[in-house]
Image 1 (cartoon, rainbow, N blue to C red):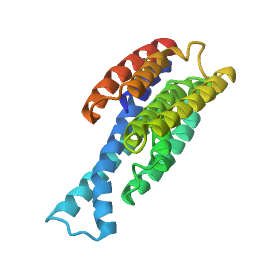
Image 2: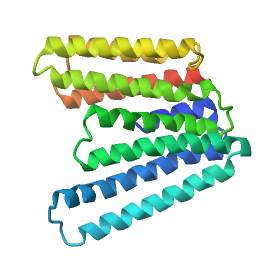
Image 3: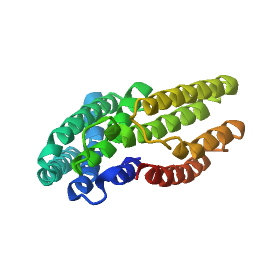
Image 4: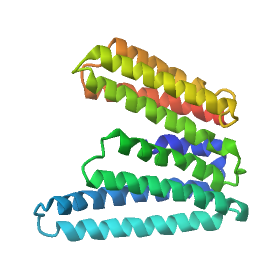
Length: 247
């Protein structure tokens, strides 16, 4: 999921900016810190015993990843233009708050709740705008177009996967919920396009997404592995088309 907003950020103006390339590197290091520290924090919260050396390893690696992320992001800020630093820091600050909220939810065992996943996805999608801002793109409404497109894909995937899971309890209700969610998403994106946030051909990347959803609801994959394999091709097609649309 990190690759999609990063690719869209490059197409939105960050391809020739060193500062823009550093933004997803810093984000990746934060991800690694998350995966080092959250399991330890979960064990501590649940008061579970840990193997010898487990706590020290988790904390040391988590701190090292966070320190490296801070250094890389500081380099991105330093290499960006003076006019770009304010927007870059503002967007990164919002993304950091959303990431922290998701980490807290993960520690408490609620990482798979929609109230945690949606803010986490929003923070991840902001990488695209961070990269465009670092490259010096003006801080207007269109600066957030790439992030909104990436966020739209994430929401569609979330709705589809949840419908697949809920189908065990009632396929009709799960299908209806998925259709309503996608209709609401389409209306929101159309509204954003009318407000000048999205590019003219914003809807093109969502064609394979709509096909995936219709196909998946009509003929659900046999298991999660097949669902994941389908999603890979959808993600590749979506990203390729979105990159062309954003150029």
